[in-house]
Structure formats: C-alpha cells, structure tokens
Amino acid sequence: MRPAQWAIRRLSPGLIAFTVVVELVAVVLPFLLPGRTPAAGDWLRFGVLLVVGIAQAELSRRTERQRRFLASTVHVNMTSVWIFAGAVDLPQGLAVTLTVLIFGHLWERIWRRLESRPAHRVIYTATTVVLSVLPVRPVMAAVNAGLPFLDRDLRGLVAIVAAMAVFFATNSALVTIALKLRYPDLTVRELFGGWDVNALELATLCLGALTAIVLMAHVYLVPLVVLPIVVLHRGVLMRQFEEAATTDHKTGVLNSVAWHDAAARELDRGADFGVLMIDLDHFKRINDTHGHLVGDAVLREVADTVCEQVRDVDAVGRFGGEEFVVLLPGAALPDAIRVAERIRTAIADLTVDEGSAAISALSASIGVSVHPTAGAVLEQVLLAADNALYEAKRGGRNRVVSLLDPA
Image (tube, rainbow, N blue to C red; front, top):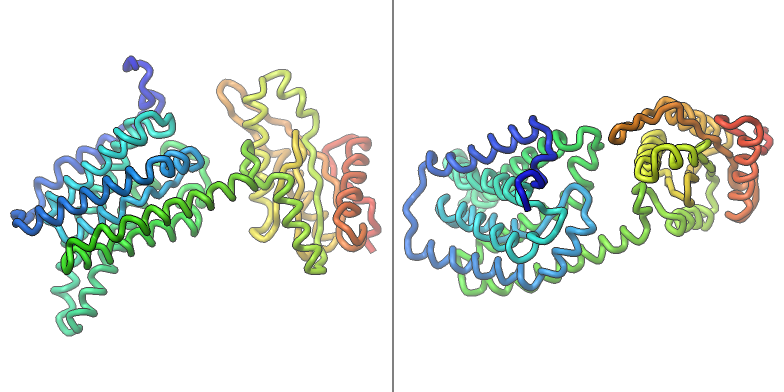
C-alpha cells in the first residue's frame, strides 16, 4: 500500500499529534524510570508468560477475528491476563518487552489482514498498554511502604488492587481521549463501553493478578490458565453473536424480532405500556437526492436522537425502512404523547452532516397507542399506533396523533 493510502492519513491533525506524543512518551519513559536488572528467575517467568500468551492467542485466533469484526469502539482482547501478570512480577524492562512481543504476535498472526485494525491503531493500543504497565510496580511498592501496619497478605492484596486500578484507569483514559478526538459525537457509553465491556477488562486483570501469584509460587502451573481464558474468550464471542442477532445493523437499535420480544415480555407481565410508531417524512427524497449512504447516516442519527429522548428502560426498535417503534413501559396515554412530542421536536432540530451533504429540516409523523386501552394483545396495540401514524401522515405530516380517548 502506498503512503498516500495509509489509514492514518484520514485522521485529524489533532489526533495524529496526540497519538505521536503518547507514543514518544512510551518509547522514552521506560529508559528514564529506574528498574532492577533481571535475574535468572525473571527470565524464566518472562519466557513462560510469553509462551502461554502466544499459545492462548493461537488457540483463539478465529475467535479474536470474529470478535474484532463484531466489535464497535471498545474491545477487550484478553492480553491483560499475561501482561498484567508480567507487570506485577517482572522488572519493568521485561514487562514492556513482553507487551511489545505479545502485540507484535497479535498483529502478525491475527490483526494484519483486518481492515478494522490498521497498523497505526495497533501501535497506539500497544502504546497505551505499555504506559499502563509502567506504574504497576511503583504503585505496589508505594502501597507496601505506606501501609506497614497491615498484615503482609492484606498489604499485598491492597497493593495489587491499587495496581489494577491504576492499570485500568491509565489504559481507559488514553483510549477514551483518542476515541473522542477520532469520533467527537460518540456518546459516553460508546466512549467508555458498557458495564459488560468494563467488567470483562476487570475480569482479565483479576485473572492476571492470580496468574502473577501462581507465577511466583509455582511457575510451571501457569499453562493451566490458558484453557479457561480460551473458553472465556469464546463465551464472550457467543454473547456478541447474541447481541448482533438482536440489533439492527444500520442503526444500532433493536431489530423487529428483538423489539417484539421486549414488548411480549411487558405483555406477559400484565403491565401497562405505550407504543410509538415513528416514520420519517419524505425520506425517499433524501436517498434519491444524496444517495443511500447519506440516507443510512440520517437513519443512524435519528435512531440516536430517539434513544436520547427516552429512558433506559424503554425499548427503541427499527421496523424497516425509515420506520421506528418505541416501547414505553408503565406509560399512560398522556405520558406517551409527551414523549412523542419530545421526539418529534428533537428530530425537527436535527442536522446530519455526512461528507459534503448537510441534511436538515427533517420531520417525523408519530402514532401513539397504549396497552390495554388499544387492545389486550400486542397486535391490536401496534395496529392502533399504525392507524394513528397513517392519520398523522394524512393530516399533513410532522405531527403526533393518537386515536384513543385520553380519558
């Protein structure tokens, strides 16, 4: 690939400058920090961690590729198990070398041919991990020196928990800043990842801490950790497959089947709920004028806007085309109408910038119904919302309509 085609050339100057500074710090800092000379036992532990890290990566090659394909912005690749163990037990120089070699192997064997993992991203990711490794031993030493009144085992526990926190915080901060510079419009959840992503990273650090203990006490038992990590990796992939099966790939909201399942669960509970049917007005004109890629960008922005206007307990889905549906658990008709008006106004205020196109003056027609007023079964509630949507279209569009008696 010619330099003019490198993916890094598509980044903003600010992001390029930030990543270059971080990478330079990661190159220079290990040489400036004091560190002990490796002993024979350190080289043995280094070799064991390198071998098991490469073995686990080889056993998980297909899993990692599939997870990378399904991942959005935040991704946990399981290397923290071996790298954090090395950061705890090895001199800093060996811990940094271990990190570089593990990431080099991942690049050569797994990521090199993945479009989602260009070289500059792998280098920056490795850099953030190197900078996360460096404070681990100083933090542990400071805790041990500062808490002499604690029992030795308890002091060790506090030290390793503090080191995990610093490792996690350093890595998260560097990744989050780069993501924000690359994608300024990302939500907080997209920047930091959900609870499941962060819990997985913390789980790998916990396993890394346990590996560090085994490494110091019984170094040859460390390979027994490999199989559980491989199985955990595959279990995470299965979860990603499940999420992909319930998500509309263009907008990130629930697909039709998943939304129906959520509504059916509310119905089974015997609870009251509201339903909004939302249809973008004159959406075909956008596709005809600007093309389908711009149309897809508009759908994503509208989906995000709808999600921002509802609660976490509400369910937003896409029924196909430019039609969205919202489930509002516990909402009476006046509440549902208020939410619908809020969504309609937010869509009207939306401007979508995609390439050279700036799409504004969007509008949506919304039909509102509620259970059980509209009917005892889900199909009746949806039909009432759909009929109300039709009336909103026929009445001039860009309005909220309900055919139910508010009383």
